Image (cartoon, rainbow, N blue to C red; front, top):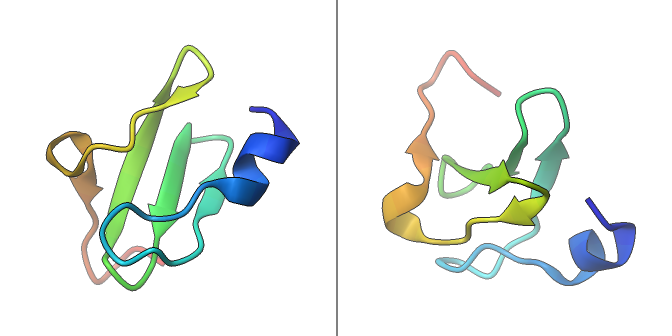
Length: 58
C-alpha cells in the first residue's frame, strides 16, 4: 500500500481514521468495528464488502 494513500483514506461511514493491518490485508475502523479488505493493493472501501469484527478483536 502506498503510504500517501493511507494518509488520505478515511472510513466511508464515519470519516474516522483507519488502521492498516498489513498481515490481514485490511484497513480497520475501530469506531464502526469494520475491516475493509485490500485486494491487489487496492482498498475496497464499500460498506457491503467490509467485515464486521467482534468484541474479541481490537
